[in-house]
View (spheres, rainbow, N blue to C red):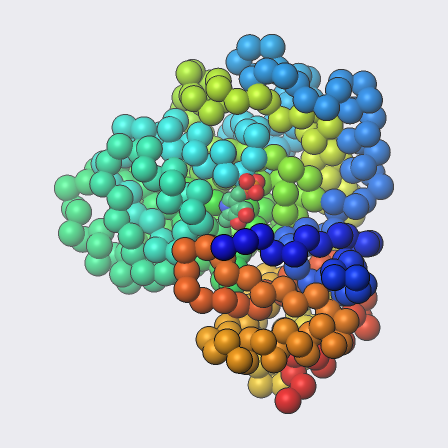
Length: 363
Ligand SMILES: Cc1ncc(COP(=O)(O)O)c(C=O)c1O
């Protein structure tokens, strides 16, 4: 397998691909904040003052005030007990898996959970059972076979990135024993779902102190890095010899400052989230009216399965001929299916969205 052709971003909604300027619906930068002047300025100023990297882990000499301030902002934004910044979202899951070693008797994980969550589960030191994708009944069946387990953990993506499917967190939680813990990898949901953009649990009306959220800054927040949001025991364990926290350099200060700017921006400019939702409803309604199999969720991803190679090639050619980047992905890499995945952003114009609709619904 080789890498796909490299893509050169041109502006917030275009890329240059094989010598052509194309409209871009790829990636997960749902507000296109990666190019926002406020984030770029915060990053450049911090890099000029503090350098590119911290050169050490936070447990030695790499703890910077920017990390503490970012964590304070995270606690406020997500209304969680503690927040711990980690190098990126994948590492955040691994760190949490290590930190939670020995805390649970049985773990139940969605069969399509992100690979970082599945890797993390291997550190937990107890049996791990897969349940059918987003299926609360199957979860209940599997739970009933493990009645002896007192300390239960459920692991799921909040939103499954490839399809945009939102996990039925409320339904899943109802099937769990009262003292179970829910670990949501909210890489995609955080910053997008919920009235206060707190993610999938807020969107599903679910709250509680037994929820742990792992997030990335590289999607809705337009930056890079990750964090774990949750109860005190978790932070205590992360700061007490955790291998990821102790053995890897801390987040570059420029990225911490840029991420902080991103949280401020999302809090102060609710129009961004409103525009993203308007764009999502606009495109999904139109595609459904044209007969395409598109869900009606508020998540800004359209995913079209492409079982036959010939049909996939034809759609790819049609997209290219219409000046749209053909975002065909196989993700996670261990699945057999390709799909066309279109991520809408708050920054796409009505004309661009309509052009996508017309291109996809053309016979
Ligand atoms: C569900 C999910 N979890 C974790 C990650 C990893 O995040 P990061 O890119 O910050 O390592 C991703 C990124 O693609 C993801 O989609």
